[in-house]
Length: 109
Image (cartoon, rainbow, N blue to C red; front, side, top):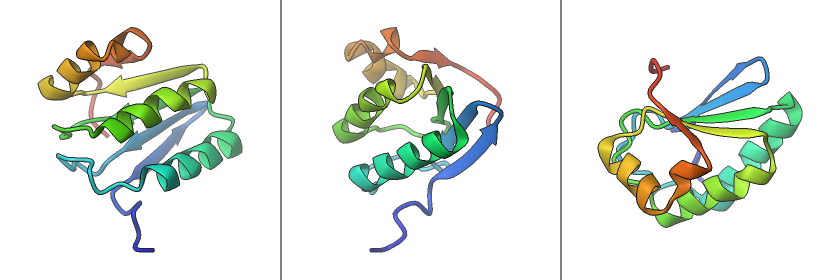
């Protein structure tokens, strides 16, 4: 198994865990199942209440990643989508995920 997580960057700030994707434009190389397991482990270990995904630089999210984001709702109190591009913001609006996630622009990690 190659290191699928080389592009994932994690930052813990109190009860908030921030996941970024290393500025990748397309998230099609991610092993979604393994990513979910890794994030679940981090959430439990750090007692994360807010899980934030910094989407800076991301222009395309595959449907599997959208499913992963939706599945993570049961693990934490709040999911934030930070710095979405116009394309990502549009996908969140079309899928109505912007209604269940806190979507905002923040300073990039």
